Length: 130
Figure 1: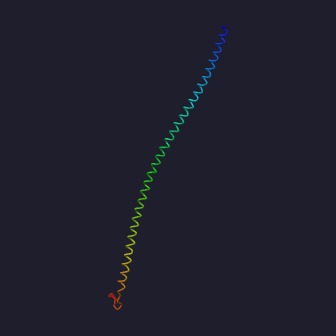
Figure 2 (figure 1 turned 180 degrees about the vertical axis):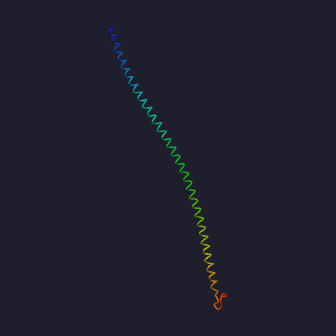
Figure 3 (figure 1 turned 45 degrees about the vertical axis):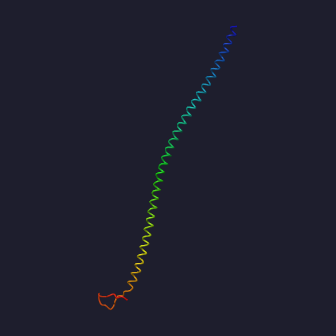
């Protein structure tokens, strides 16, 4: 009867050792999974840091582009204003040229009414109205 009890105890001990071994394996798997999860979280944190840096660089580049766009817009407005002034000045020059041409024609008409008197001697030549 003691032998049966010893065998029963040995059987139960083997079951307990087997259960402990299984539990140990499960704990090892859990530790491995926890380690992998920790590494994955570390990778995620690094990726987030990289993304954050990229977002900051994009924001900075966007701000620079906005400043350049404002400068270009201002320059275009300046060119447009200068073009308008140039057009106005060109119109004024054209009008003045037209006036000068008209005055030149009128002066030519007036001058054509005079003749130099070739009968005069020396430097005392005279003009006469024809």
